[in-house]
Structure formats: C-alpha cells, structure tokens
Length: 458
Image 1 (cartoon, rainbow, N blue to C red):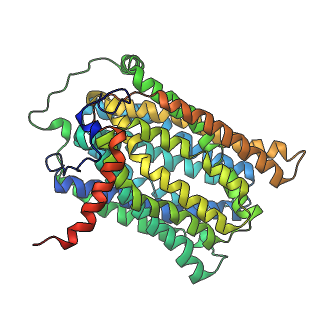
Image 2 (cartoon, rainbow, N blue to C red):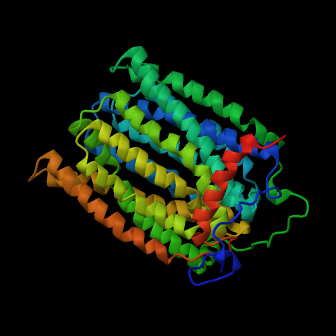
Image 3 (tube, rainbow, N blue to C red):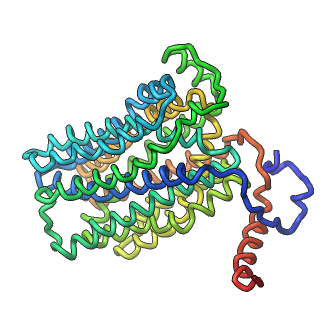
C-alpha cells in the first residue's frame, strides 16, 4: 500500500515529488454552485440566529441546566431521526427534495422566539428546528458521496466546508461585531429575532434554486445500483457487517463524549472567569472560519494524495490541546492564540475525516449509513454535553467555580489525548499516490512553483 510505512518504492527514494494537477475528476459547474451556495446559506443562517437563541434564553432567566438541555436536545434531535430519513431517501432514490425542504424550513420555527415568555419553550423550538435539519442531513451527505469521484473526495468535501466557513465568518462578524457596535452590549435580541430569521429564509430560498437544474445521481442514465430489497432491520444488519465503518463510528462516537463534554466549560471560562465581552467572544468565533479558509483546501489535497487516516489521528489528537490551552489562559488574548493554533491544525486535517467516511460507505445505502452514523454520534454528544455541565456543578459543592472548571478541563484533556491515539489503528480502504514520507518534498515543491508562477514568461 503506497502510504504504508513498511512499503518502499521508487517514489520513496526521491527527495521531493512534483505536484500533479488534477484535471479529470471534477463535477459540473451547476453542481458546484448548488453545493457551495447551500453550504454558505446554511452557515450564514445559523450564524445569524444562534447568538439570538443563547441571549434570549439567558434574558428569559434560563439556568445552566436549561442551557445544557437546549444544547443537548439540539445534538440529539439533529441526528436522532437520520436513519429513518436516510433510509427513506435511499428507497425513493432522491436526495434533492429532502435537501431543499430542510434548507428552507429549518430556520422558520426560530421566529416563535419572538413570542416566548419562559426559557422552557426555547427547548421545544430548538427541538423542532433540529428535526427539520435532520430531514436533510443524510440526503446532503449522500448527495456528496454520489457526486464526488473517489479520487478527489477530500478536495471537494474540503471546498464545501471552505464555503461554509466563509458563510460562518460573515454571520459571526455581523452578529458579534456589527450589531454590538450598532446597538451596544445590551441588544434586545428577542425584539429583533424576526430580522435574522427572515434574512435566513430569503438566503436559503435563493441558495436552493440551482438544485432545480441538477438531475438526481441515482436516476441518471447508465447508473446501475444493486437493488436492495430488505427492510430497515436488514439494512442495519448489513451496516454492522461493515467492520471498518463500525470501528470508525464507535471510535468517533466515544471521542464525541469528551469533545462535547467541554462545550459548556469553554463559555464559563470566557465569560465568568475572564469576563470576555460580546465582541471579544465574536472575534474568537471568527478565528475558526478564518483558519478554515486558510488551511482546509491544502488539507483536502493532502487527504486525496497521501491518505486519510493519519490526518484523522492528527485531527482528533489536536483537540486535547484546546482544554490544555484554556487551563493556562489568564487573559482573553491568550484564548485568541489557543483558538488560532488549534483550529489551524484541526482545519488542516479535517478533510481527511469526511473523505474517509465517504470511502467506507457503499452508494446504494448511503442515506441509511449516514443516518446511523448521525444517530449514534448524536446520542453520545447528548450524553457528553449534559455530563460536562453537571460535572462542574457537582465539583462546585466543594470548590470554587474556577477550581471546579480546571478539574473538568484536566479530565477532558487526558481523555482526549488517550482516545486520540486509538485512531492510529484505523486502516486505509484505498491506495494513494504518495507516501507521507514524501509530504515535505511535495509541499516544498508546490511552494517553490507558487513563487515562480508570477515570473513565468507568457
């Protein structure tokens, strides 16, 4: 296998490898426009509304427990029904109707935040929102699996993520910086909630228009798929016979407990310990999409040419540094450095995760596979989010909030580090062009060619 440490071939002996241009594994222009526009629109809409949800809940008197339940319900219901929606889209061999309906409707229930008088009702609204998101999630992933050629899955999934990050950055800058300077720190979020919801619906409608010109991949002439006659139970049996997929799913899900465990903890450090302002928090949030724009496409190319599994290990291992950085941060600007450094590593390696998932999944049951993956990870995320909040709450019985938070962060740091190493046991399921030993030379050659390009004679 080309990227195995034990293999030796002629290319391994070279000091560097000349990067090869990809020219014959693209998707059509209209398909690219549809995917990228939907990714931008969904992330803009989410970025516009999410701050309003949090602040409205707090203004209504939500306790830490209510906030934990809001996030936990979102994690669970966004993925809980995915196997059913995914299986349904497999049966009808259609993805686009699910994507279009979900993209347009998911944000609409947030309009009812304008009328709520108690934070408990926010949980109900968030539940409906995430069920509508779940309607389109497996179809969205399945469509990419069917459209993207195997050879460039990393590159194309990276591009979709890149455009989504661009949308997130625009929305975060608007809600976190522009609105704060326009209205001050004490914005009446509930009074203005209909504005971001309306903008989100409008952007989403525009974004899904290109899908009208795309033919369903499973309905195209010449496409031959093995017809699956079994029911949902039979489909689940087939999935659990796919050992590489099951191993990845369980590793990813167990790690997910300790990933989501820390989500409430970071907010406590930012706001209660370091007294970060809304603008400072917004600038922290902007760092992630900025580093995504900088590094995701490079990581996608590496995933396609050198392999996925080492990037997956790097992606998971990098996350133990996040709570470690929060433990030692004593000023807000320290968090800027933590966010930039870790998110740079995370985004450089993230394309390997998505591409590997697509490698493991057969096209005929793509929707069901993604549905099961979402369901299992969603349950683990649900457990992790609730556990994180209550962990700190229990230790506050004996210690101050800051000490209890530090204990929780140390625990998360250790668990992420240990489980991250287990990802090294994942095996590639396809061959790749180069070995990772050639990566430094590949990057060096690509950098030199980039510098020379402006000086080439035309």
